[in-house]
Length: 516
Image 1 (spheres, rainbow, N blue to C red):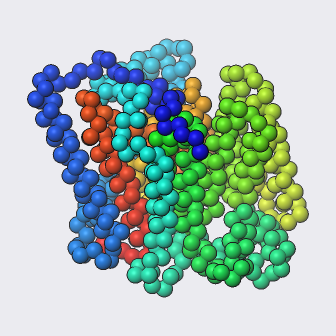
Image 2: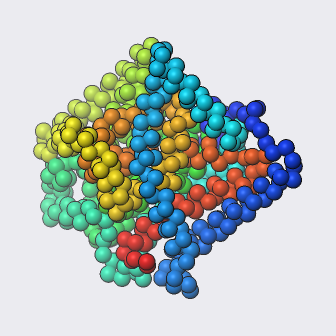
């Protein structure tokens, strides 16, 4: 793993990271110092509350203060911010429409452009722009691989929280879909090895999840652990895998390990983990991790196209389709649109031909699997999901989105902090940098289908968005050094990480216990 923490940042966190020379500042040094002291004091107070809240959740039910004052305070803050979530999602998904409108050369676009110029200037007057090496000024990011290690450890611990004996003495599996995986693997155990593989590739969930079911079966068949134990331990494996794949994706895209470390830590506390635990979306969770790895290799392939990278790309493409077809097809669509947009600008057919070959191989293998083992091909699986959408659903857009955020998954998607920072990232990132273009393509494709689904369908679209990556970008845009001081920036970064950790700990604990 190469060290790129000192490499030049090539995203808009770097592109927009030029010093804002026209920034006004308090003229009196004492006033400026007083404002700084007040800001740092407030941040210290907030960090202290969130840190104690995390301790209360981690020690529950053994914490001396049974009233959980700090945990309640944290939960109250989230409930106060939650109503802003629908607006944040809408802006996050459709800010690209405004950006596209500005790009045209007509009277309306010029007016729109002048408005956005005024808005951007106003935002700049509120806070200074960060310098190109600003991400290197955060003390918490000095050791990005340590952040990755912490993320992996936290992911394991978070996955095991619902199975702590004092919280879940009966060791009852949690997750709405967990029982399906137990039933499928138990059915595989009743058959011969070949029959078990055939069942996973054809009958179990219409053959849509063999790449997850087969490894579980292989572990259980050894007799080391039971099927229930294997399924219960899945989150403790999927969490670290997501953290690692997120780190590799952001490192490859940004060429900066510091931001990759932050993104990996945020992925542990993201919707993928919390909703994945609550709903038992183990295959979807794994497919998202595979998607980050696939896109990381794709970006690397653009830098240096080699046969070995193409083989890895093809293997990861097949793994997504054999893990969760819906996510696989969505990510391959994102990759196709991304590659075509690059080809349109660069006019290099060499970029398109490998993608066409990759898609052809993926489709061929998927069709062969369907013909020989039964079940549905990926296209059939996705078309079945798309059939749930309709134009009439667009008429109920607002009720659907509020249902997606506040009803489905017990309201776990109504995290205004994660959505707010992701919105800011989408506001700033552009289309010139390949990494930013890839993220934009991902959001745009999701937004095009989003209005035509009910709350459940919209919730799944939100789940598949690259929220941890966007959150890390937005966070490092907003939390920036001011007045040549970095203490408040480091405290703010720590505060957001603690807020996210509390959200994840609260979710995991509430699966088996309801303290308040």
